[in-house]
Every structure is written in structure tokens, then in C-alpha cells.
Image (spheres, rainbow, N blue to C red):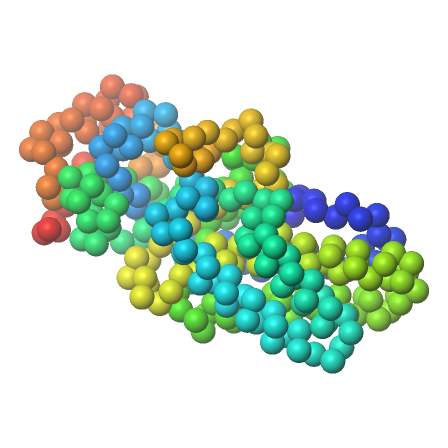
Length: 320
């Protein structure tokens, strides 16, 4: 996400060093997290028959807007926690730390997680043949689970592809308050530290550029480079059994204009994956309540669409 440029405030080079430093730190954090998130075993996407056919026929996944997920309040949990941490850090007597945190909190109050951005999500699970996943996402056991090989989820490089819909970042979901707060605190404290150090070293430049411009640049950099990601990959502890891994596509809103589509009232973008490459699909599981001819249907469908032979097609052992 390093190439999402938000700074349009014409700050002098000495002050632009602050967002540059934070961007470098944030990219190291995100790439380390993505390396840790790269699966060693297949990830599973549970779905109904219609979506199953669509994914395999077109070799793409529909990534839906974060504002139109099944639980519309899902991201309020982590966002609320982020704002609590921002206020705690902002209680400092240091001028720049205090006002930087106030600026970030104001942006979140006004824009929530959106602002100049859009985010699109695809969900996968580390669970193989998991009864709750069949119930919730696999058409109550009548659907299918596509087992995707780890090779499809290599860590991303820190350069964005020009087409916004191609920039899929992978992150494991963090569950529970302790881990969520720790991630927020690390990012917020680091951004505040850099903001304060650079501002204190260049007080005349800050005054000339206006403190609000400098602080707004750093606040938006924190949102773009770390805080939004942390909010999109955190859930309450009660969901920990999902073992979810998220594919996240993020960019400024205008960059999605050529790729945004709608299904019903839900906005989505299509993300292409090379599903026909050898070994890309580790296996396909057929739901425990799928129709009796589903095995033959899947094999015929794979053959008709040019998939490599030998992809295991197995029946779920779950009971629903």
C-alpha cells in the first residue's frame, strides 16, 4: 500500500520526512504480517453452487465492499478500540503528540473508515471441512468448499499494480481485545513519536506550513498505512473459531471507478486468480447435504472449463 499517495499539502521536504519515515516503518510491519499470514496449508472458500460455478468459470473472486458485509457493524469493534487507544496516547502533555492524536480522532469521527478510500474483502478459512462454515457460508451444507493452494497467497511486494482491483493483500484476522489493542498501540505510538520528533526539530517550518497541515498529513498517513488495515483484520474473541484469513483490496475511491460493479445493492470488484495453474486448487469439497450427483457435476464442470486433471473432489465428512 506504499503507493497510495494522500499528501497533497505541499509541505517542505524536511517535514515530508515524517510521513516517509512512518511509511517505511508501516510497510515493514505489513510485509512481516503478510509473510506470517502466508498459509502453509490450503485456505478454503465456502460458497453455494452458483458462486462456485462463477468462481471457477471466470477464475475470479468477488470482493465486496467493507460497508456491505454480512454484519454491518463488524468493523465498529476495532474502530472503537482504535479511538480509545488514540485518546490514551493523546493524553500526553507533548504538543505534537496531543494535537496529532486529536487530528486522527477527528478524521475517524467524520469519516469512520472510509474517507478517501474504498476497501473490498474476500474471506477464506484455515478450516477444512468445518461444520459452522458449511452452515454459515456453504448454503447450509448444500454448497462447496474450494481448497486454494498456498502458492496463490504469496506475500505482496510493496508496490501497487496500476489496476486497483489487482492489489490483493492477505492478512490473518486477529481475535480479541488484547491483540487488537496491541496492534493499534504500536502504530499510533510510532506515528505520534515521528510526528513529535520531526515537528520539534523544525518548529519554524511547522509554523510556516501551518501546524494543522502537518498534523493532517501525518494523520492521513497513519490511516492509509496501518490503522485501516488493523481495523479490517480484527474481530471479537467470540469469532475466533472461524480462523479467517482475509484478502483485502484497498485504494483511493477514484481508482476503483473502472472496476466497481454491483450485485443487488452490494458493490464489489473482481479479483483474478490463476486457478487453472497446476496445483492451484488443492481440492474441492462437496457439502454434506449437496445433491447426490454433485460429484459428477463438479468433475464434468472442471473438465469442461479446462482445469488440470487430478484435482481431488471429495465429499464432506461433516454432519449437519
